[in-house]
Length: 274
Image (cartoon, rainbow, N blue to C red; front, side, top):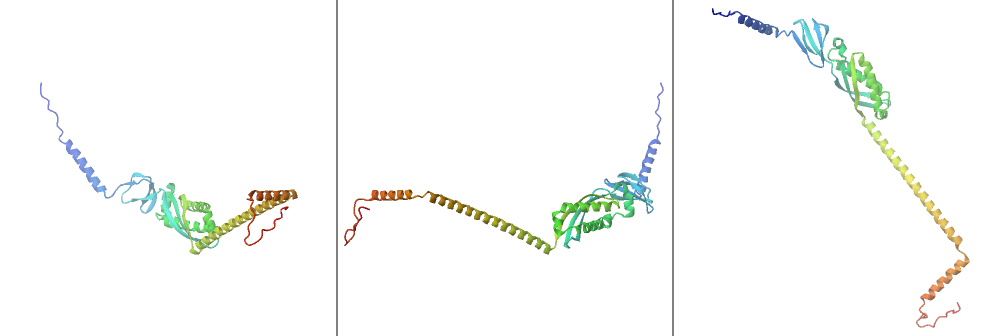
């Protein structure tokens, strides 16, 4: 049998080498241009093509046209904004409030929000809306009512904010009043009022106690008078005579049979019959 020599293909390894080198060269060339873009979780990517908004990307990897398209990330997660507001109450008391607002950008209108407002929507839209809502609702209540009706006040402010921010595609998730602060004069007035109420309550309790004690004394006096009346009605001439006999009998029982002795004098006259 004749020996069969296998056919060698010396050009095949060179082809793969060229492919690998070409891919590496392409990556090195396109790397700085970044034809791909990754939108992070909880964000939307706004596509800007030659300065104009052309759409949006959801989270994940996407391809873009280098040097033509740019991607801007817009956060659509729930965010927190804290704002301080100074407003006048219905009774013209200055109230400093610290409020917390949870909100998020409407994911279905990210491109519109970016196009109309940009990324500074908190400073441009949210803070002014909060200030306006706080002033509008605070003016409806007195300073004391702002404390006693705090939950109702917060609910009205949240409803007003929800309506106004919705026009800018900002969704309100939660609203809370962290703190109310009033002037020193108002705080002193509240403290004085509480003190006066406590003193009035104490005086009322003392008056009630004195009244009860007086009623108890009157009742005791009436009972004592009634008892004396009953005793007086029970005292008769026979009872008095009986008491005298009992007293004389006790005196006789206690006498030792000796007459009283007086120095330098005669024996005193004793009425035997008596």
